[in-house]
Amino acid sequence: MTEQPRDLTEGRERGTISLPEPVRSPWFELSRRVVAALSILVGTVLLVYLDRGGYRDATGPDPGISLIDAIYYTTVTLSTTGYGDISPVTDTARLINALVITPARIAFLVLLIGTTIEVLASQGREMFRVARWRNRMDHHVVVIGYGTKGRSAVQTLLNNGLEREAIVVVDPSDVAMQDAHADGLAVVSGDATRRGVLRRAGVAEADQVIITTDRDDSNVLATLTVRQLNPDAYIVTAVREHENSPLMRQSGADSVITSSDAVGRLLGLSSVSPTLGTVMEDLLSYGDGLEVAERELLVSEVGRQPQSLPDQVISVVRDEKVYRYFDPVVSQLARGDRLIVVRPAKELPWAPRPGTHNEDAATDDD
Image (cartoon, rainbow, N blue to C red):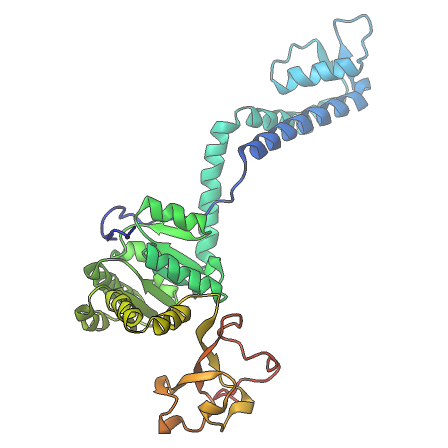
């Protein structure tokens, strides 16, 4: 089943922020309220009974009160009926009623009408959570579009150590919002080409922005808007047609992935050489077999040739420029180099190989 193209310029325009809610059983919520109500009831009964000398029963032969009287007084008091047959007569009992039993009565009533109060309370909690989320959101990743490509990109980020709290999804679709919430992600619902929506997603403070819609025109508009809001963000965007790649780069994208060409090339390789297609699919998949990874150069590797390292080096990044491993410029590795390697999937992409974790990375600052 193929994913239908979706236009992020349609749908919501307000940019509503919604955070994933913790999943709780309805029976848990019901039990929690029942236990709270019983706790208030039992606590008040004990309080009245222990101070029974401060109460008088105007209807019985004995002006004192028993445990049954304490239960009766508590139930009619917490329900605000208050028949007046049993009343506090000492200063202590009256203070306890004013300072303890009256707040308990209010709490008990809140539990009785909990459905309405819960709605109001949930709105307040949501406002507080969003405000706290805004204050903490910085140096995060914004993913525009949560279709097949967006979900795969997010999964790759999570598998490589990024926290879920550091990812914000922008998508107008209710289905995408539900999927993102199910994955524990915050969502800004709205038009990804509008400044207000992207500001709510914190694009101005984001380190990276991934744009994965299925329409090239939407991608161009979103890229232009993101670049205007954040000149320093690293923008990765997808295009369906290769001819739109230059336009995407002119719009401000740092990296452009042509999805249709990539899929077509992989299909062609699999037809020409099934084994080569299998290897390429292995490199593109996560968690099994081989992975393409980037890591820092270790101190012990400075001055060596790329071919002599334990990892299978395929490229060297020097001064933000990528060189193939056989390029004479990188015949000897230098401080500050980063390596693009093929390695077993069980190893973290940014980590040194096993046995070298205690070595220092050879950076320019050393």
